[in-house]
Length: 259
Image (cartoon, rainbow, N blue to C red; front, side, top):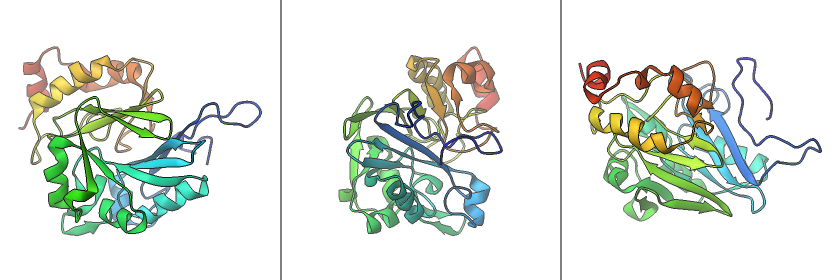
C-alpha cells in the first residue's frame, strides 16, 4: 500500500528509491481505523483513530503504536509486509488508543493483542496506573518509561517524549524524522483537557517547550484524522495550527482551558 489515497492522505510507508528498494531500513506505516483496518466497525469509522507500525525492515521486527479496534488486522498488516510484531507502544490510556470500555462499548486493544503475540507494552510511567484501570492488562505486561527513554526495534531507535496535558502520561514518539503525537497535537488543534487527568497548563508547556525542541522538518503524525491530510511538517503545523497562536499561558488557558 504505497502512494496516495483519493483524499490525499498517504499511507506513509517508507518511500522507494528508483530501483524500487527502500530508502532506509525504517519501516513506518500509518493505518486509519475504519478504512485500513477494522473496516465496517462503526465506532472505528466515527473515531478515525490512527494506529502505526514502526520497525526495522532488515530484522523484520516492528511495534504497534496505539493498538485498538481490530488488533488482529494490525498484526496481519505487518505480516503482509514481511514484519512480525515484537512490541506495542501506547501514547495514552484512552480506550480508543489502547482498548477498554468507552461509552458503554468494549474496544479491542492491547489485551487482545497479547492474546495473539506475547509482547511487552511500553507506557509512560505516569500513565501506567491509568492504562491498567481501563484495560485487562496485568502490571507484568507493562514496561514503564521516563522522558527521553529509547525503545530499540532492531536497529531503529524510537525516542519517547513525555508530553503531559491531555493525560498525565501522554507521550510522543520520535523516529526517523517523524513525530507520532497521539492526542497531544493534531494538524489542527490539540487534545482536550476536560477528561480525567487532563491539565491545560501542562499541555501548554508540552506544546510550547517540550515539542519546541522538535525541528520544523520533522513530520507530524497525529492520533486522529481530524484534518484532510494525515500528516504535515512540524514547521507547517506551527504556522497553521491555532494552538500555537496564544502568546502566553494565560491566553492559552482562555482559549483551550475548561469552560
